[in-house]
Structures are given as C-alpha cells and as structure tokens.
Length: 406
Image (cartoon, rainbow, N blue to C red; front, side):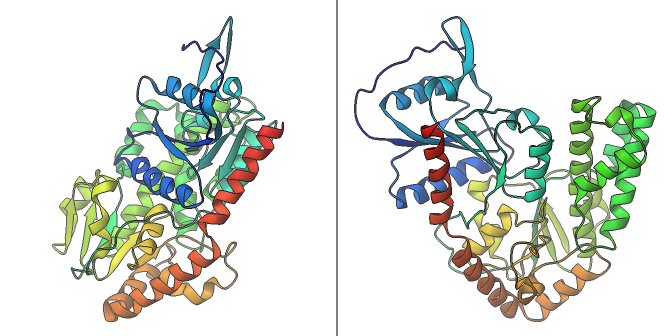
C-alpha cells in the first residue's frame, strides 16, 4: 500500500490525465489513448498519459494533482479501485487527491467487477451500451447512476495509399467452444454446468432466428424461470457475475466461429489466436495468421472486401470505428435501431446471425466491392457528423465540473 501526503501546487496549469495500461492482449489501449490525447489537445486540453503498469504511476498522479488536474480518464475502469494509505487510513486515491475520475466502459461489468465497483462523488461510470449500464446500475451503483455515452470515431491515423487483396478480413481471438464446454464439465458442479449448457443452447437458437438478442437479459430470465438459486445474485453475487461472464465469452467465440463458417465460399484472412481446430477443417481460401498488436494492424483494414466485425453488444465495436476512420469497408453485427432512426438506409453494412444473411451480404460485396466501399464511407460520414468528439469531451468536462462542485 502506497502512502501519500497532501501537497500544494508548485506551478500553474490544469492537466488532463489519461490512464493507460499496456498489458492487454494486442495492447489496444496504448493506441486508443494516444489518439484520444490528440483529440483532447484539439479541444484545448493540456494532456499527460500515465502508464499504470509502471511502479511509480501513483506518485506521478499525485505530482500532477498537486499542480492541478482537470480530470482523469480511464478505459474499462482500469485503476479506479486504487487505494492508498493516508496516515492511519486506507482511502481511495481519487478521493484523497480530489481528482475527478471518468471511467468509460466498452465491456460488460461481469467480466471485471472490481473495475465497476468504485463509487465516490469524484467518480463517474459511463458505458458504451445501455445493456451494460443497466447491469451496472442494478448491481453496483448506489451513490450515482451509470449512464450511456456515445463514442465518436476515435482513430486518427494517416490513411494508407490503396486497398489491396481480394479477400475479407476477420480479426478476433477465440476460445474454442468445444474446449470451453469440456472445462465447464470438469470444473463446475453439475447443476451449474447444466445451467451454463442450457443458457448457450437457448442463445444459439435465438441467435439463429432473431435480429438481436440481449444476452444478459436472457440469462437473468433463465435464472428466474428455472429457480437457479446457486446463480442468483442475492445468494452469491460472484457466482452470478461469473455465470454472465462465462456465457458471454462463450457466445463471443461461438459467433466469431459462425462468421467464419458463413464465409466458407469466400476468401478470408483470419487473424488471432484459438483458431487451430477451425483452421484444420477450413477451405483453402481461408488463411489463418497470428493476431497483431493494434499498433501494427492498420494494414488489415485495407483489403478490397474489407473487414467483417463481430460486436459484443448492440453498438459498434472499435474495429468497425477504425475501419470508418480509415475510409475502408466493413460489415458489422451491431444493431443500431435504438440509436440511429434511419439505420435502414445502411442495412447492407449490418448483419445478424440468421441463416444465410451474412453470406448473402458478402456475395453482394464480392459482386461490387466499390459500391460496398462507398456505402461504408457514407455511413462513416453520417456517424462522424452525429457523434463528434467535441460532444464527447464536453460530456466528460461537465461531469468533472460536477465532481469539483461536490
């Protein structure tokens, strides 16, 4: 536990601090945060990035706080639960330093509950998806409600010269569902194992029939309908979160493998880990390669047919937004009916897991890749105009002002 003493400012100038964590798989945060720094600076902010895997990061935050911090920004609530010793007490770093902390979460709260639990007048939890915010409000929020924030096209990188390669690109790490089922069978009590298997079978059936399925609503309904006491949040909140997290991860891999299966008749390059069994059974037109660090992956977006992306929620995934920022083509499983009134205009860009739907849209891309590119660019222009970074920054600034006034 790090001990801190309150200090006074030695020089003027409010800082905006971005917390980075470079230990994630494929290191997405380093690229995103470098880009966000540029956006904040374009809005007049004096920005520092602090790497929270460094041993002295708390001391660096304290130094910045002594000289004035407008707010700190963190993805996925990383470092929000940091505590320090102040005299005889153990306290929140952010409350002790009186630094407003804005946590923007792009993933479901069940996966890392500790990153969603911190509550304070100095902390705000914002989610990119309404389903995630509802879950957070139901199980974590007591002091202040979580809310939803619209994410702009964050990436700002020099576009490459030209598109090359007549193939689709699919970039995703997976865990083989067959192996996952085996682990569940070995490690879970029989009633809990059976609940997991019942959940995935229900979800698979509904995915094949419905345009969108709110996975976590289905799991809550299953717990109530089958009286699964061992998984009820009132009895064991940790088991409840694990259930949601396990099934969510399973379905992400299942849907990713379903995408590649739907593209059996098309040329595809798949990037990521976990594809060994699928690769052995795949047609020759499917090429499997290791995943790339985000900093080294821009070229993947420049095939003539574009990327195919699986979103973990109804909203756009970052891969899709990166394609949009690069002016390249995409197909996405996002469902934007709640956020874009005239989304039917862009129906050719979005797919569900209903039978043959993705294959039909891929066939249309192959017939006219230039038309697909033009549709992708029209949507990107529309999205950029509707969800601008200035609005994103203004929302965060407003929350920071609330914290400072409390």
